[in-house]
Image (cartoon, rainbow, N blue to C red):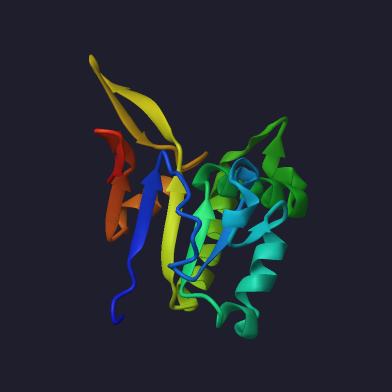
Length: 171
């Protein structure tokens, strides 16, 4: 495998058979909906420092070929909480200030560089959301608050949508 592929897939349904030798960073406890016999190695993430700890553990990461982040919007929510906790002045009420969104983008870029430094395949899972352009409605990946997720999408190698065709999953 010379080229690592970053993929965003939304309306994700877990494959969960371990064939990708994946570690799942589960930001929304989505694995609770999957039969435990299909659970792969996962970390229920509520604090971004837990993810950094695993990413920085070379012995642990050597066991995996693929990093799965599920879902992107919840990852951004965890990063927002981390920014607000470390720099409370960057939050006004329940929202980040303009400077707070700058700090969020910097935090996301730092995390993304650390993920890429593992030299693993990366799969980003996103739910979908409806957007409107004039009279046209269309579906896009829900990348969470701020521009970080939208910027990331521009740099992906492949983006696909999981759907059902004739009773079978298709991308």
